[in-house]
Image 1: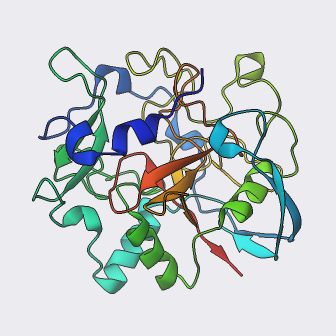
Image 2 (image 1 turned 90 degrees about the vertical axis):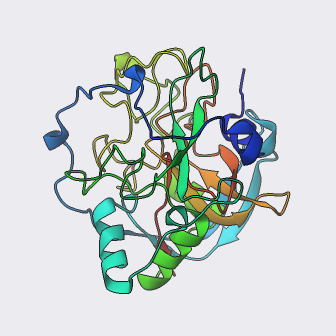
Image 3 (image 1 turned 120 degrees about the vertical axis):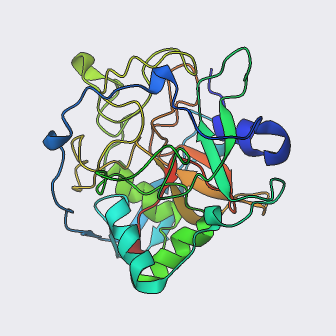
Length: 299
């Protein structure tokens, strides 16, 4: 059954996020088994895509993806990768920008963000507000991005993503642009075909096992993967599916939330299942988490 992880967890931040404190990475989010040196060593070149008539949405999955429809869009250029810690660091260095998670949060009165942790009897929620979590310390004060320059930046709000995009002379993609880029001409259930893991090969950074208790990490990662650890789609774009959700420049229908696309390392077969190009999710725009990032486009 398709279920909605983000809407359930973030609709009411003050009541759903149980507990505060320093993040402790759960055992199911343990040591990564992939050799990170097998991923990209440099940023890939952005890709120019032709516009035209675009089919977005799906009539065969979650209700919020319906109806499948045709839209017309102009040509645009899109990042081949999710914005990295290195890129965001340069932005902060040049501008002195202070991200939203580094400021006191409504309902908590201290800086911080939402961090995933496998539930336990003492802490049944798998989302916790962690004081001190921000883009430099995505899981809280005991974490770091040191040595992870090419990981996607997280703990960024919609406002943070837009600020970076403006500095870079770019913008966030519309849902139609993002979906065109993610599908890369494919009509299959998944961008790479109709099987989630053909011949047992994981095609994106998602959750394997029974979410939220056990992650077998068959894909090699318990949290975020560096960019380019999985094959690009037919347009040469990396991590459009899985790894981290991506902010989209379209509001959700309720007018209070924002659309995010692509799924993340927390999407599993038994929960979420949003590692498809047409999948979409509502997210509270002014709150950051350790599984949402973004990429940019240019007209």
